[in-house]
Amino acid sequence: MSLNYNERKSEELEFVIVAEEGSLSNGDRLFVEIDEFRIVVFNIAGKYFAIEDVCSHDDGPLGDGEFEDEFEIACPRHGARFDVRNGHVLSLPAVEDIPAYPVRVADGNIEIGIPVE
Ligand code: FES
Image (tube, rainbow, N blue to C red; front, side):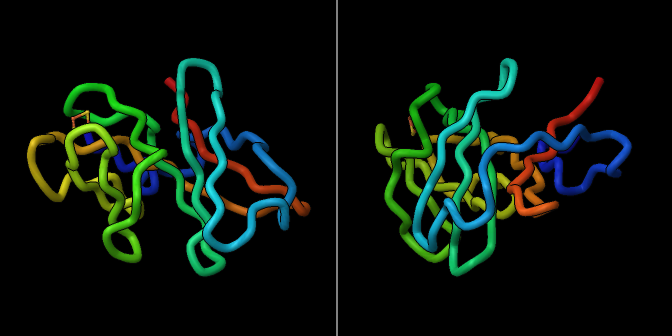
C-alpha cells in the first residue's frame, strides 16, 4: 500500500491541528509528534508539505536535511534524497519511499491528515 497518504480518502484520515496558520513562514519547517508519527512540515513558497521525519535508509532525522531542489530534500546522514510532495525516494542509499501526509488549512489552523486504521 502506498505511503503517500495524500492519495487516501478523507474518511481514512484524521486531521490533527499542528499550528496556527501564519506561524509557519515561507522556508520554515516544523517538527511535530502525533502518536507514533514523527513528522516534519514545510512551508515551500506558501504551500505546506508533510513527510515522516525518519529516513528509510537508516532512520536518520530527515527533516534536518538541506533542500537540493525546490521539493527535494537530502538526508543529512548519508545523502539519500526524497520528494517532499509525495515521499518518493529519489536516490541511494535509500531504496524505499517514506510516508507523506496531506496538509490543509481549516479555521485558521494547519492540520495534518494521519491515517486511521
Ligand atoms: S539515514 Fe538517511 S541516507 Fe542514511
